[in-house]
Length: 358
Image 1 (cartoon, helix red, strand yellow):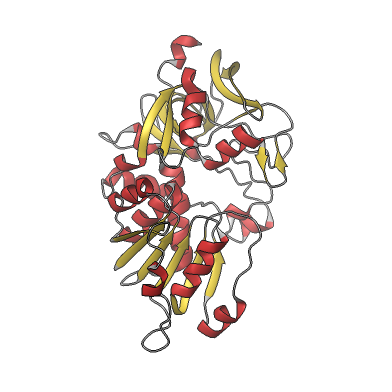
Image 2: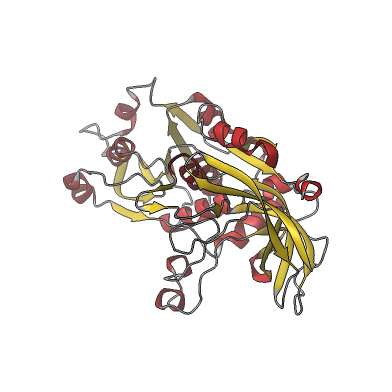
């Protein structure tokens, strides 16, 4: 049987449309999910405003989205882990499992990755912003009773944060600086708190994002736009310290933020770069003299299951992350709000009415 499916499609920069496409019954090992909510990510916004990012550009219409949760509508032959009626978060990461990096245990570095809503390959990989999503059963992680689907839809960005924390090494008893408190930064605060950080300091340019940072577990918040002397309190003073923080989770992708963070790091500190921002210049002598370690963090893999487990456990409250939810018919309004960092953290699309529209 085939179904009419409402999809959110980017046709060109600033050309966002709700199109109707077909969805089929699940085959062996597959699951048909009625998507409940989908979170708008920074990459979705780049496609919306610019048609891509860096050298990546859409060459043909593409369904957006990769942060979704919903309810199982049907399962294919051999599927036993979930059943119709179960609520699930859907992992958008689909590594091939056969390339050299997959085989050496680095599936997030897969050479043949098929990540939802990506124009990094051609043909593009269609996204998950559709009210009926056909996926593999292994992508589905059960959502516990009582957990809002709005919060389960944040499992993907939370996975990114958890992977960044894993790259930092043990955090127990450490002082952590989080630079940039958008969705990934705010969720990195929660991840660092769960992993035992003794004190978390969050820095950003807006009070609204810092309020969310506090709600997600930051012990100290600093608006660097108004507190222009903040670095003097944490950087080397020439007498008693060479810096303050053991770990920096850099989530802004901003060169000035990275350089400031390096000044505030203690010797042999670890800097994890999660934010993307292009080429930057860093003080090499400082990195050498302090013996700092700088590493990147890209996507996730095993962390998705952990993210859903932590959300299910109730160990963190996702409510402060959600700015609002918009029906698919108001997608443009949702994307415009999500683009305003002074007003929005995580904006969701609500697919509840899409079934009737199809």
